[in-house]
Amino acid sequence: HDRRYRGERLLELAATQLRAAAKAAMTAIPQCVVTDQPEWPRPYVDLVVPLRSSAAAGPFVARCAEYSRRFQRSCSLYFGYMAKAVAARQAPYAVTTFVDTDTFVCDAAPLLALP
Image (cartoon, rainbow, N blue to C red; front, side, top):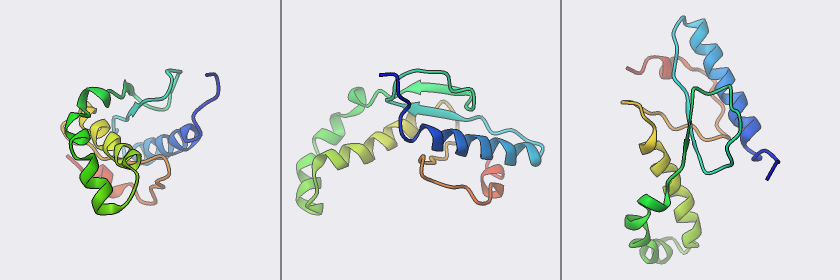
């Protein structure tokens, strides 16, 4: 698979903007991406962690039928949402802010104020 993930450009843009905002505030925010996508150089983030959702999927599998019944949606959507929660927990930081690839940060000040 030699094509970049469709959200990769958005990730690069978001990471670059956040780094620029932090630099303007004379601080730094470590950036990590947890991904199930192929490994390739991502110089715009500090750390890339492979997503290990299968190892943490047990509690979600048990609730799949309940999710489908309650929301009348495919359980595959449930796993997409839960994979993001699992990914956020895998970040190696004391405080983690999850930003999806389609999120545009208009004002980084609240992020820069985090401990």
